[in-house]
Amino acid sequence: MEVVTTHKNCDFDALASVIAATLLYPNAVGVIPKAVNPNVAKFLSTHKTAFNLVVPKEVVLADVTRLIVVDTDQWRRIERLDRLREREDVEIWLWDHHHGGDIDADWRCQEEVGATVTLLVREMKARGMSLNALASTVLLIGLYEDTGNLSFPSTTAEDAAAAAFLLDNQADLHVASFFLTPPYEEIEKDILFTMMQNSETYQHLHYKIVFNTLNLRQKPPMLASIVSMYRKIISADAVFITVINDKKSCTVIGRSGVEVIDVGAILQVFGGGGHPAAGSATIKFAEYEQDEIRTKIIEQITTAKISGATVADLMSFPVTMVAGDTPMDAVRDIMQEQNIRGVLVGTPKNLEGIIVLWDLKKFTQEKQWRSPVKAFMARTVATIAPDVQPARAAQLMVEKNIGHLPVVHHSTVIGIVTRTDILNYFYGLLPE
Ligand SMILES: [Mn+2]
Image 1 (cartoon, rainbow, N blue to C red):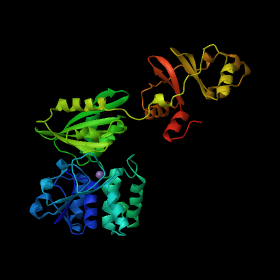
Image 2: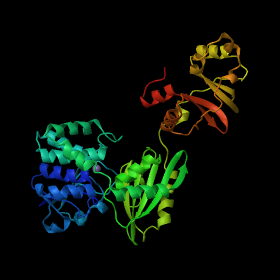
Image 3: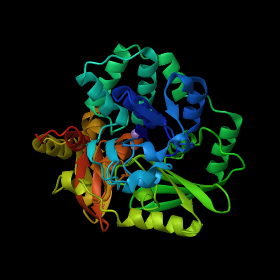
Image 4: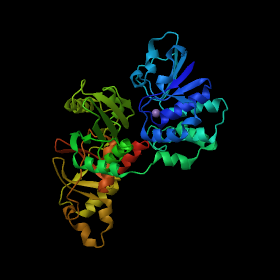
């Protein structure tokens, strides 16, 4: 007997991947863990009979010859069928888009795409299969959920092509959006409100990390999406919400909006998992006490290597600076000669202001050109540190609507980044 299964707290990508695998391997029985996400439960309550699905305890382990695991590569996330792990007569196959787990498969298709479903769709396309509307729809829901409707940074071109294939096979977007964006209910709004009131902020470098603990009498169906929304509302770079389940355990839900804070990797330490942007872990208090969890998360964030470029890599230096009494016509000549749009006023140790080309365009009278730059410069200058990621510089430029950011280290101007530097960096363009 062949069985396909997936992780506990089964989400739509997991469910869709199980269903896709039962289509690819018609002899395989789909096994869905007891714990499924609320929107999956809602879907199954109306659609279960359409698919050949059972729960783990219905499987006669002795009869299993092949176990196909989808959407996880960790044994501890598998309900009951993890007992097949040591059985030499059972072949283990794996389809997954995570990595770093302990499932040592005999055969595997494991790649970093936005959703596991994409890998299974690839195989369907290769076999020239077509799907009915129902199967296409559930696969599309899985794909959209894991890729944020193809918008998460983990999305690949192949995910989008898989979506096209599913739409070609009559996936129904009305049904999909019904399960992808269920309406918020009163209890969910209350939780969001509670979270807004008791957050604990931790600052690491320039990142805002927010912790929150929730004691809920009832776990609302949309908790994960409330947490995502919460992160955006409070403009945190990452949030970790501890939901107390009972006296024995809690579930930590993590969400991140920055690459450097990989919540999936962080929560893996507690036996959970997920992606860089979203993850969760169920933790027993016998293993970690509540305070320890927070300390451990912070420890991991602070020790993680910040890889990739920093502002120091893209800034220009030396920086052109002029004294405050420099006449405006001289400043204009400097801008023209050096082909720059902004000039700093003062000295590296004493930044007094900034004048940009735009300020000059407002000049109407000839005598203004003879006036000193200090009469026209902006005196409040936003600056940035050299060890910050370029994304933070971009964010600051957008927030303050400015095109120049002096780079300041130990109270000294050491360089400047401009909009052009940022654009060149993000689009991989070479400097002119
Ligand atoms: Mn997935």
